[in-house]
Image 1 (cartoon, one colour):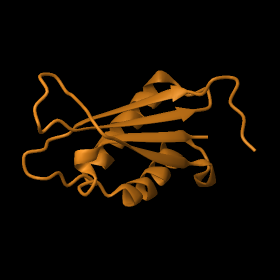
Image 2 (cartoon, rainbow, N blue to C red):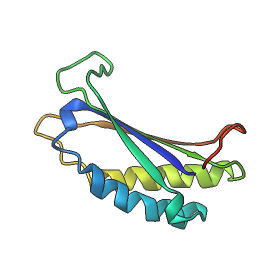
Image 3 (cartoon, rainbow, N blue to C red):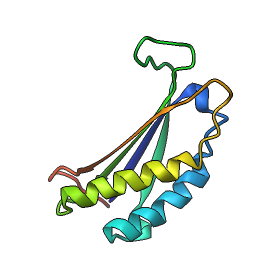
Length: 116
């Protein structure tokens, strides 16, 4: 815990400093929701095709999903989502003509979650 998944458009492959983002994201999460740095795990998934609204060639998006153990208030989760989006902005250097849509969601892990 936390389980972090970052889906991003393939058009951002060279414009998204993923490792640097993850290394900055983990301490932000620790500070915001009071967890251990060693518990943070991030995986990145490049999405080969995305279509946003009317489907222009400049379509791009980044979605960050953070799953945490239950017990955090909705306000704290919203605060973390906002902080994550602010952090993300500093790690995207989109090519000219690409303005990605960025989203973040913090949700509770299911009771079946286990870690070894």
